[in-house]
Length: 305
Length: 291
Image 1: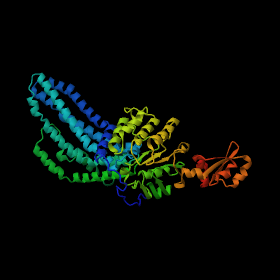
Image 2: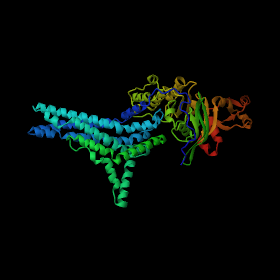
Image 3: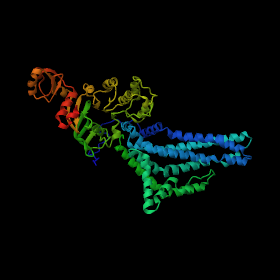
Image 4: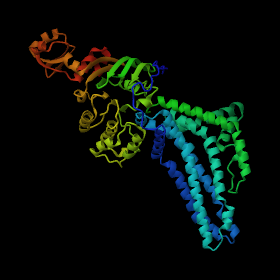
């Protein structure tokens, strides 16, 4: 192994009398995030498409089925069915998008050699990695929220129009479906589970994508599968598999309610306390931070593959 | 001002030594040509200068350590590497937007001015451009950056002759002035001969020749010797001898031109001929490869 040290002392940054940059510190980060969205348009196309399909399905299937029901109560029951289902669908889509994005984020730029161009610009490895991790941790959650809100709002509007058109009052539908409350729950779920609880998953995928020369998906998944299998064979236990399942399904106390029923605020506050006192949360965040630091350092050594 | 200063620069990949104690000084305003065989260490040296690879030894570029301060260094350094590395998925306008967004010394209007002289449209995607156009685009970006050091690694590789000629013409006419420094590696030695101010040969990770072009011209003389004078010419200890169409061409180092003029036709050698001569006189095993 060749040594990677160098013996130069740190030089003062302004020893050349270089004029201060007119580009502010956050600007490279902002443009790097935009760059990710230019390159990976599926980040917003996929959730938008799922949202559109949901609305379309609601329009032709659900409304038709509802109007075939004999009385108002049954119509309302049918009309409020797809809200949580569509939300779950959009969230699942963005989760999958996040996983595939992370697996490619630091691999694609090496594969197509464009890393040499990005490294020729005054953008640090830290900024680059931060811009990439902000896609699953900031951009995708915001997109999810926005698309879910828009989808549900359109669905609500459509059902109201249909009910009004058939001469029925919409007050009962609005009373049964409290959209703002659902959105609050969704926001809570997104921030706790999809941002904080899943952070180490995304960080791990990013690190592997920056490290693997090929097949980052296999490198990310196989070690976990191997550990689980070895544990099962050697000790006939499945602690690792259980731990993985725990990480992916989220701490059960505050799993998103399966139905669209209005959740109680008390429960929400309680589970926030539980969430914050879960050791898995803090261990996960520490692991995520360590993995990201490793990814930043690794990118310095990486070139085209 | 010294732009690049290296002392004892070493880099090994496993048991292969890519740089074997390179000492190097590049002064502001020079256009240095780094010439060597494939695998001689040119790209490794450039990568070390650009902060793309770790190394041992001392290296300062514009007073900075490239490995730990790459991002700050890149405000004052630009590079174009051997193959097209612009993102193929991007539109030309997006590339301009991005560079303008992150680079404090990028003049977008200037870049657009250069692009206007080409057939490149801003709405095009990079993948739709020909190889020559991608290089034109990259050159337009780089020339619009007010950098102190420009590093070019085989910038004209794979380009047709028209683009190659244009490349160095624009570089000299629209970009280069005495305050800028350019380091270029190329295999197309003949097209940079009149561009360079300094010349460096690198072989097996070591610098085997480093001189200014003025020195090069005064130090080396090539003589197409008249057949009856060959013995006399050989007595003056040429560093290389070759035969073209039955005539001997001898290369001399530090021999008086007037003394040589009587032997035959005297001229300044091409860099390529000197390279072959210097490499031929190096360790025997590279002899064959030098041709």
